[in-house]
Image (cartoon, rainbow, N blue to C red; front, side, top):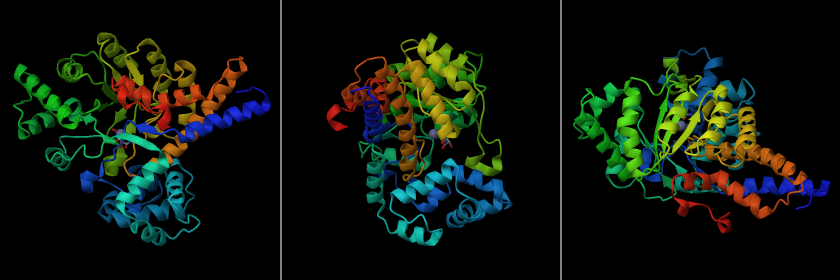
Length: 427
Ligand code: HDL
Ligand code: ZN
């Protein structure tokens, strides 16, 4: 590709087109395959009552929290629409994103009448909606967040229905084992595991059996936990013992990565329920110690505080068993995605996973990936333009390969599942 002015703009456009069009593996979501029935969220009211929008609404609203929660989902959605869309301009990431989804799906977003939008949306078939959204967002595969402690979800797995749709992969999520051991130790015996709160050899063996059996049942791609920013490792505490004596041995035996999502302080405002969590700075030293102690174990890591992002990217330069991923939660906003993606490319080239959606409602895939593709496309266009300026011949096939790496193949190869990698002809 040429590097003349015309060539440069042609190069930039090619990069942005390739980024727009390359199918993606979304490696962390809270979506469920259709077989999970009521756990699926599709409706416009589901989109409006997304906890990001609840938090933003309650900054304007003087409704007592419990009065808001006592409203029906429909009533909550109307309150959110009134506060965030009609009484104030919807210019935040989450409000603008919702309008982007409505527009992409053909609703007339010049209308502010929620009832009109609802009746159009509710006329859609849920199955067709899922296919339309996956197509529009160009999501080829996605990874769910699967919790065997959740009674409703566990029933679907025990009925053998969990993996009926091969596009929906499982990740075994076990926060209580690390963050609420007393509760986990009470629940596990109900599931048939001889566990007590005392950290005995039998308990450890039974928790390993629990993880091993659920990794098998789900064909889990990785074992995942989220932890607060005050997670320190190593330490003479329950978390370090659970990680060293149970989780790492099970992950190594199963040959799957351990995914750490670090920096969440749960329930800083309990009245907001799911919307009440906060970010907090974390210690990348914990990740460093784990990567050094277990060089054969692969770690997928994302952190929630902006302040940790650059040092996490530098740490990834030190450990090839560390794969950093996504612009998580409060970082899934344009300014942070731009900043993070830029220095990740500058420090790591294409050896990282730039984004996951964290979607809870299907339609969100459209705006979370639409916005991410715009930003990643912009950053990569600058990167290849700079590369072309060195006289290096930038081939379109190379760009397509690089974007396939970023959008899924880094993930699948890191999992040791290269057969799932996106091939040239698929893109
Ligand atoms: O712990 C997590 O996986 C987080 O992503 C939380 O689910 C959070 O509520 C969320 O949805 N963030 O986007
Ligand atoms: Zn999540």
